[in-house]
Length: 271
Length: 310
Image 1 (cartoon, each protein chain N blue to C red):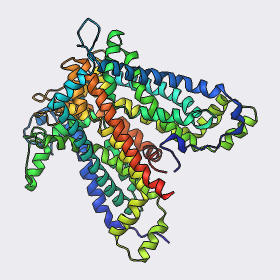
Image 2: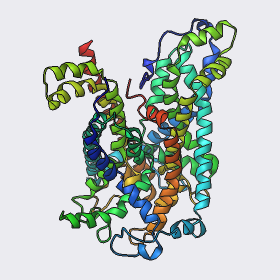
Image 3: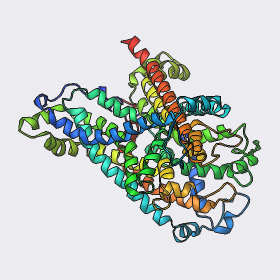
């Protein structure tokens, strides 16, 4: 029996999608406006597209440096978090460990601490340890949210592999490290990829820590876009183009890995 | 889909040969636990210490012990008590809107699931999740502009009332809340949609045969079946909503007239505008305690019906 296709539902679905992502389309449109259109007092929908804002982004505003910082910080934090998380998630899901559930719950509970709560201690310690506005300092702080997140997500993916597989390998004399890297990691490649991407996205989009713990040397993309303007004086072309540049790579990756990403996003809530 | 939100859902049958291994699991956990211990326990301990001391950021002398003075000062301030109320108003309002809208979106897309192209549309609809919240804030600040913003322009075209969305003290908190609703309703939608796929279709077939209306099916079948999913997604959103910071910094910064002055904004202002680290630490501790209470109560309530059923 082929399911009846409710073709009339295209109307509300398309309408909803169009309305909901209008702000993104509007930003993309704004980023392509020539500079004189941007100064107009009324929103305009028809104009000759121009790359003025993108050119100025890199030539006048030094956006390239922000991108470089963001790649280094978010990339570095993601790599370190994933290395530690793969080991920790393996021990927490598949090994006989006294107090395993308590450790797991404790790591989960770390995700509930609002970052603003830790900013005063981090700032004071970093201030006296000369870690403000340093790469190592911001990297350490980023681990405080990247690592619990990565462990939490990986645990779910690891738990899906039947334990009989490692039993067989262990019976053949393989140690835990070998089992992890020869069996579990290859089998959860998609899950590891999704976890890596989400860990990276959260670090890439992070604002609070970067805003308060860096100054000039390590300005990231969100900070560069967040504090560039005052309410009276805002360069909307810059904000729109910068927003699109920071957002587009993530969208492309998500579209390429659509199926796995949806699984990753809905993880934990759905069984 | 098998997965877990709490570690104890992990299979308890372990590969037998490991039972003798004692050191290996600890060695594998050690790096992560060391990092998290330093990054979580140390700041929390230092926070508690600072909350009972007075220290200006630029003061050269060591922090001075003041007992509970920071707390009594904070609670004597009208602004502080108001900021707690605003934090919960923002979180509660946005949470309700995200759950209702997310559910409706999911119900619509689920009904249309067999149409070609639905997978792509679903992904398109979820792209707001990928934006940095500070960028989302800027996008909405642009659209909310009273003179040249596109919202007032479109409202004008169809005859809806125009407003200065972020400068009107009666509206600002809701305008800010809506930014979060816009960005995160797609997340609720996605999770609820995945939950709907998990409901056995046979349940609906029986209801269809009985001629149960769509409304009654939703109330008596879909929502009870999705209870766990809804609870988990509500908890995840609540955790995020009680810490909203970027969106407010990117738009109103606590104004107008304190209308969006929430606890996180107050902590930021005490620490980095007034440089009174003791007050900021005390306020942070209040936020931490409130968040813990809310989450614990929420989990208790969410877990209760399950126990009754078992």
